[in-house]
Length: 480
Image 1: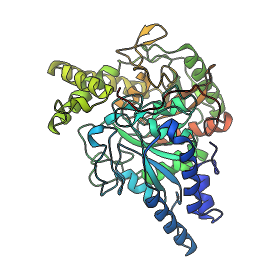
Image 2 (image 1 turned 135 degrees about the horizontal axis):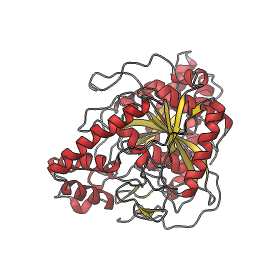
Image 3 (image 1 turned 90 degrees about the vertical axis):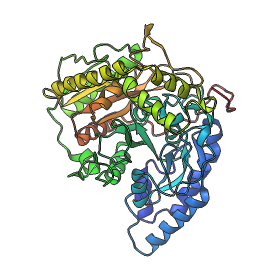
Image 4 (image 1 turned 45 degrees about the vertical axis):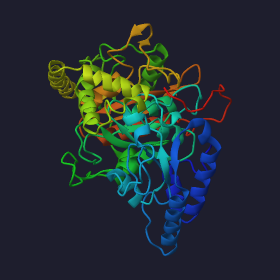
């Protein structure tokens, strides 16, 4: 499952130097996908004719001496919640599984393609992005390359499985409550949720979600962000073009003496003991390597989970109702989709308004924290990757997490519109990746990327999951 090139940037640079042809890179990706996709269910749609045509065009441009872009020839996966012109978008749902190909790219996909990256197919998402595993009636169960009986997370589980298995070096993702960072933690990848508006997106009813990519290296993430960032007329929240190159910032930005606080629980969250120990030890090592000031403060915040659920789920079920999906097509939805819909219907107007007041409160708490700190470090997720065929965990360390969830750390930075990155912290005793989350002050994507890069240098991590025996499982798709 190893790459012929270790990363997207190395591959792009080799192709641009004409040390390797783009068509060869696509053929290599095809071979790896053919070898591993059946057991992982990472890709749910592939279009090799489209990819090979794009690769041939890039090779011709390079032969003419043209610049084919900073990601020239890099094969990538597109999360099947994102649009890629020429390919269908199923949203992980039986309802849209046989839909027609899209005519336009999502904005960030368009920018990746314009930079020379070549989409090879669509990666499995949770249905409508509403689950922290990737298990749908449309496509079956997506599995973790580190252990096939475990989930790679969701909702960007297919992207995580594809990159962690070495099928492609980069795949798109999106993150509202942790859908980039949770899969990154569960599969040993780099997953950045940028500052809100850093990457433009189509207008929607939520102002919390953010697009991104999953990669094996910090440099890959930084170069991808350089490509995707910048304003877009239809997105009124999109930020001005960055004043620096993130790829340069990861090597040069001075972060010494920044004030950092560590939190194992945000004041309320149960966390697996081994997850806490591994991520805390890595945070301590990073602080020493980067010359940071690790304070003794123990920050506490209002629980973010109920806020997200009580605001976002009613909006989501209203949208499904307007589309004629709920309740008319309830029987076609996956387990997580039905649960989310029923939860959304259970939220009354008073609970919705109370959640909005809580959102104001938690944002004030975040503001107070960053008035005295530059960085917050936490575990990425409260537990290791759970069973691919199991329901969402309700207990961690014997404590009920139905209200706090296993993703309170990622949810907090979502509510604050903060840049946050998950990087590999180490391995559990049973051989599963554990992630460290680095959260920056508003708009300081450069800081979290720089710190992630410093950690990558002092504590290198495997670029892809090792090809080793795993528990045999039944990978036949079925209802869930």
